[in-house]
Length: 140
Length: 140
DNA sequence: GCTTGACCTTGATCGCGCTCGAACTCTTAG
DNA sequence: CTAAGAGTTCGAGCGCGATCAAGGTCAAGC
Image 1: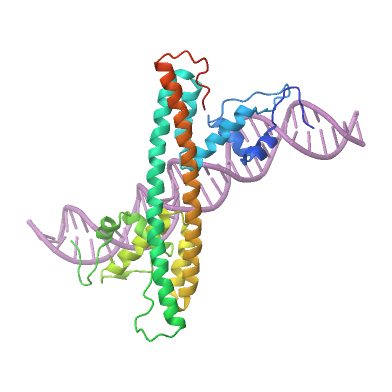
Image 2: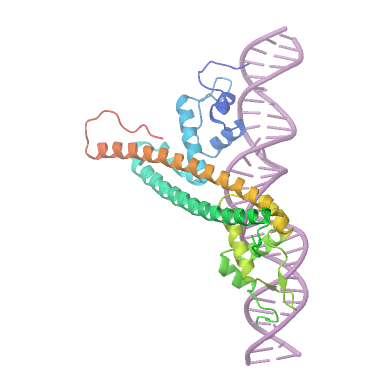
């Protein structure tokens, strides 16, 4: 069912290892995020453990909002070897900065939301206790 | 240039007040997020201060990842008046929960990224000082 | 009256990130 | 030998959230 002339994970195994679908794994390769992976004599992909951790790293970047295009920039640098270490570092630092900004923005939104929920709850309990406070829901 | 038979903000004024483009404001109205707004005799939109704060609230939801579809659900409830207060509260609480999860996920990613940046920096300074530590960049 | 410019509606188009379908190949089991 | 099943490529299609284009209306200023 599966040729094992070369060791490594099949695309299906890689899929369950990473959580990306086989379709998406191939798409990432086409998109230049994953370097053309080793093939069996029958032209099937075989993923190495390094591929697994690279994909995991890609997913981390992706889940923090990095675009495919920027991830490709990073992947291209990586392809060029150790001379690009500094450039990659700067890229990561920039992304970290963006990520921190994103987080603090979300936290601010969360606080605002909590406040709104509070006033909702206040008005609701007023309703339920039929407290005669004459001002009620004027909510968003 | 602008008919003022009815007071309120024009779509352009609304745009600069909220940061959404006029296109997007009209799109949100079509999408059922903003109830059909009052019109001048010449059929132009006039936004009230309440509209401004409602849009601001929508933007908050949007920026925290709520989909247009779910925002419409919320807006529909709001249209139905005070009887839906409890339902809206539940919706907001659910979103708050999702938001908190999102934030803590991002924070975890940020920590992982910081760690990776650290090892990059360590390897870089090793390179620059040409410290004879034999292991170098094997980075993602 | 005519131009100008902001506004209107409808429907098309876009960018992104997948996601899927069709047609084909390869390997292994029966 | 054959059939199943997992893999391959290529290109099309989708869902979302806008974003834009075309063609029309309206009101104010010259």
